Figure 1 (cartoon, each protein chain N blue to C red):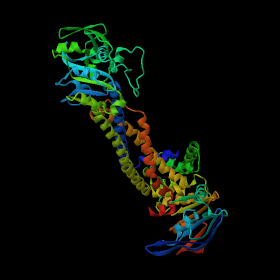
Figure 2 (figure 1 turned 45 degrees about the horizontal axis):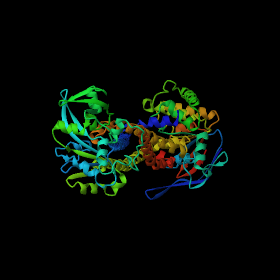
Figure 3 (figure 1 turned 90 degrees about the vertical axis):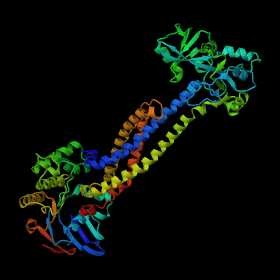
Figure 4 (figure 1 turned 135 degrees about the vertical axis):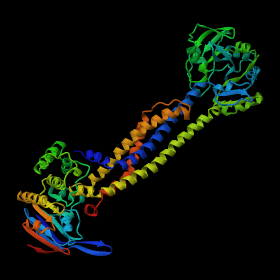
Length: 404
Length: 222
């Protein structure tokens, strides 16, 4: 027999106490794991969105609501396309790129899609040239942006950076979901509202509403919708330094009938949720430390009291205080390990199931959280059991044998 | 082998001081079989606990093979109990969640024996006690007599030279009590020192020497 056999057998001797204490640790740890797991994926989602956006300032009609960034351009109200020229011809510093958009609903094969018109860079540059090339004459990305310069960026990369260089009037870029639904490949043709488009690029999956859109030349889409030179939104790649110096206010002054917002404002809700969840995970950690620790200490004190005779007998057989201390701490360690591992499993399951509902993100298990779960559970277990274990180790064996 | 020099031990019970041992002197030689008798509360069990290194006296010294037991560190005293002293309790004090075999193995585990040695030695001892077919039974699954025999096997596990038995037949039927006394005589014949606290005159008569205690004093040494 080994010492751990003795500890293991005793664990299951008092099943009700074991179950209560185990559940206390399990629940505490699982809540920490699930909140942390969801937070990590939610933070990742925000980071991915910001990275995928490319643009960081959005110009919308005054009445536009701001539910999400991607659907922000699906407004009934419109902006005049002339705003683009106004921006280009202005003296505003920090406008690295503009991405005007106009969207309309189209049907194909019995399914509805969003057809979004965009203006290529060469036409924007042509407008800028009227003034002498102030805007767009510098590199497309300013200091602080992480994307490295590529010698000849592909259309996918150009699109991600909101900087499509050239786009023919009958050319279409197809989002991944549309491509899959219509089984399209580059070189295919599309018939939309009587207009034939040639698919030049299938865009990679972004996890955003862009996946369910078809992008074509702005003027073609405007013509199909019969709307004239109007826009739903202008995405702006603004220089970070200039944004902090008040670029948004300057655009507002220039375009008083438009609403100008930054990306951070748009994802603010999600960032706030993430922050709240991060704070919640600390709060739950505090709760488990206090409640779980108190429950564990209470359980161990009761256990020491109930086992007075056994402790006295072991001491009569020659057990020193070190062995008695080890017996109780080993028990705490086993409970912590069990509670930590089970708490990780339950917490991960909760995160995977509830993550999409709570934070709107898909959540997968994070193996490193197992270390956190076990570490927290074992540390609390050992810390809470130390004083009861020490009491057992210092017990007067003769008193223990006489009392019971 | 065992010596008590002017040992006193007091208890305070409900504000009243009770002298459990009062200036007690005692000399016990190797291989003796001693019965300790006396009325309840006369200090018999206290004497046994003090001799066994389980209860430090307020005054005086207890020597075992010339070493002062209570001048040793607690861990050293635990080591003396482990290697030299074997306890037998009236209520057996078996660990309820361990089998008969494991109850005996505990003693060997504390002495640092490996698992193979533990199993071999515990099996031999339980077979000697006639419990070869009860190795995997828990105490609750054994009769009272069988439980006491497991306790005796556990006591012998580390081959102690001194056996301290506190009312070993107190909870047993006459037949089992006779068997336990015979066993104590047997281990005494092997050269071990046996000190047995008892209320039973017939059990005391089986000892070679009787110590009578009253109010914490050793009155007779016959």
